[in-house]
Amino acid sequence: MSTYTAHFRVWRGDADGGGLRDYRVEVHDGEVVLDIIHRLQATQAGDLAVRWNCKAGKCGSCSAEVNGRPRLMCMTRMSVFGRDETITVTPMRTFPVVRDLVTDVSFNYDKAREVPSFVPPEGVAPGEYRMLQEDVERSQEFRKCIECFLCQDTCHVVRDHEENKKAFAGPRFLMRVAELDMHPLDAAEEQGLDRKRSAQDEHGLGYCNITKCCTEVCPEHIKITDNALIPLKERAVDRKYDPLVWLGDKIRRRT
Image 1 (cartoon, rainbow, N blue to C red):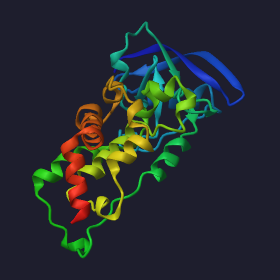
Image 2: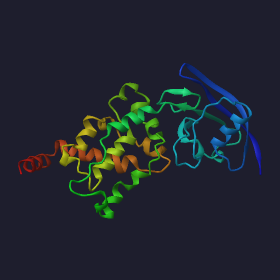
Image 3: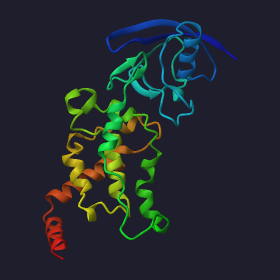
Image 4: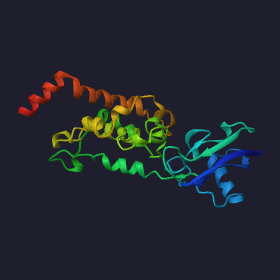
């Protein structure tokens, strides 16, 4: 097993401020950035705060920014960096720092609560749901989300504009709206909830300018922009501006 010493720069501090500190840390073959952070805790910085859980890329806990790119530390192999390269690890920039690499991601849970849940069809019990696999596949991809919030972190609508957070749900939760809108059994519209309109008016769909940065950082390789946000935008525009759709809605309401 080959071993070398890497140069790490890790952000240390809290909500009141902080800065980057330099460390020289031992690296072994096959390790990931989270391994090095743990070794750093064990040997040099016992008070370093970092959030993690599964170390298998499934819990989404160890989100951070490595050399400026939002990543899961447990899925970022040291082999992708040169041995003489300085590796900078900082907390997610979009969310308030709690301490060191730990950020307050409660913004995301607040946004999750604002999205109305699945509305079951009237008169159909849960065990009686019947759906074509073709319909299920449209939104099944979105259920792979591990809620690492890297897409939320990299989205420049909130990353660079704090004032947008109140009006914009972010790609993760617009994807949730799209998933429910595509659900073949969701009866929200029959209950008076227009998910397409709420996506536009309440969750800030219009703020998204489809740069695909959210898709690029997704560790589950979900095509957030192409398969969720763009189709949702198309549906919202059709509902709002298509005269035939508008007329059809009027006729349906009369009947």
